[in-house]
Amino acid sequence: MLDEWAADQDPTFRRTFYEERLLELKQAGKTLIIISHDDQYFHVADRLIEMDNGRILEQRLSVDALINSADSNKECQASTSI
Image (cartoon, rainbow, N blue to C red):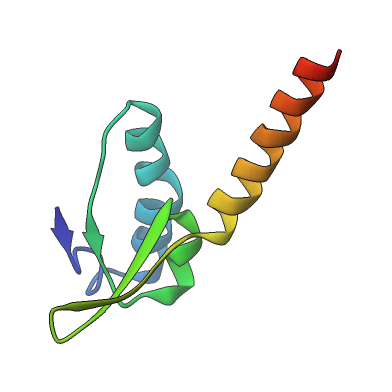
C-alpha cells in the first residue's frame, strides 16, 4: 500500500514511477493499492475508487482497463466463433 508515495517527487521520477515501475510490478503479478490525488496518472490504474470522508463514493475501471477488457472480450468472441 502506497499513500501519496510519489507526491513530493520530481516530475521525471513521478512519470517513471507511474508509467514504468508500476507496469513492471503488475507484470510480475504484484497487487498494489495506491492512494493518490495525482489524476494525471489515474489511467495506469486497473480500478479507481473515489472516497470522501472515509466513504466510498464510486468504484470504476480505469479507461485503459475498460479498453483492454473490451479488446480481450473481442479476442475471446473472435476465437470462439472460428
